[in-house]
Amino acid sequence: MLVATPQSLHFDAPLALQSGASIRQYDLAFETYGTLNSAKTNAVLICHALNASHHVAGVYAGQAKSEGWWDNMVGPGKPVDTDRFFVIGVNNLGSCFGSTGPMHANPDSPDGQVYGADFPVVTVEDWVHAQALLLDRLGIRTLAAVMGGSLGGMQAIAWALLYPERVRRAVVVASAPNLTAENIAFNEVARRAIVTDPDFHGGNFYRHGVVPKRGLRIARMIGHITYLSDDVMNAKFGRQLRSTVVQAGASQDYRYSTQDVEFQIESYLRYQGDKFADYFDANTYLLITRALDYFDPARAFGGNLSHALARARCKFLLVSFVTDWRFAPARSREIVKALLDKQRDVSYAEIDAPHGHDAFLLDDPRYHGVVRSHFESLAAEVLV
Image 1 (cartoon, rainbow, N blue to C red):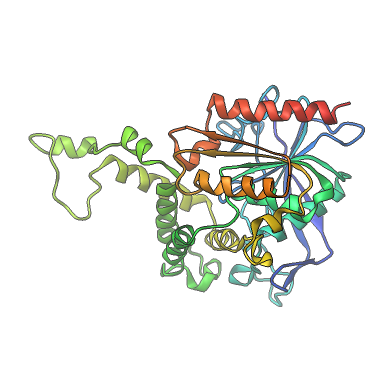
Image 2: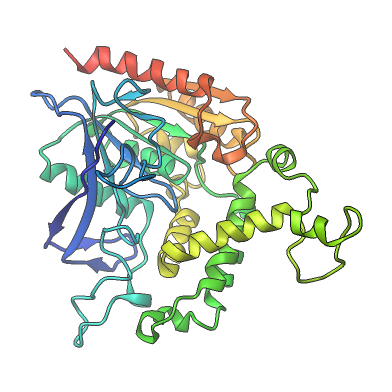
């Protein structure tokens, strides 16, 4: 069993952000797995999505059920094999899992208050620049691969464009070149649920000793619906009633209440919302969903994605899932076409998995087989 050890690096030099603001005296939490070879050619950076962290793989010593969020993908003998590769997971700025974020003290505050609503807006590109600085400190100049799913895939794309000379491979899973209007709309509804919670206090709820849990619960429920496919939701829940509802009536019937939790799917969503509100920070949710909204490398090229991706020099692997309607396969195919237009080396797999967007986190032998094959070919290039 792979045992993970959290680490942290402190940075004193200010980080200039895309917004024109900057952040100084920040920390980045990270974990590493495997061994960096003497030539430093086997490093793989894993980028996390919205509610994940630097804890990509393995478990924490003495902590039950502490598996990393991509433990089925990364580890000894797994598709991203830590017996061969040195894998790095970094928690992004603005997150709530160890790196500097809204919950941390603002060095510019005269009375030592936490950032709260004053934490600067960050973008995917800002995260990539911070990750590059961390790799510099680790003595890693070139990445064998950068890999991520969903928002993590956007970071992998940004790496290929911002640091083309530092990346050999980019593995982009269940992602997109930008968000559709529908996706931005989902994010906005979730944000409004948070900011209109009476306990939000304009983002400075820490000072009031409260947490806007109602807003966080609704935001998570909205998001969770979009991560699952209709087929999975029907197969798992259908129109099943909660057992307490069934037992209350003479037959399987409804309570005919507008407020009671009657259906299994309602109970499941409320459970997910409650769990999320207990560990995630509201300001972090606003920051990360806004970073999702802003990502659009083609914007600076008049919307021409081919021109934007022309800067990339690495090989690409893209994977999408047929039932993922949040980041539909058509969006991955846009990236593939844009790369082919510029004669870039790209492989593409479209997996007919039933799980919706969450498929990138789950076990599917076809999906894992594609990734394993890609990293085996990469090992032949870098492990000499």
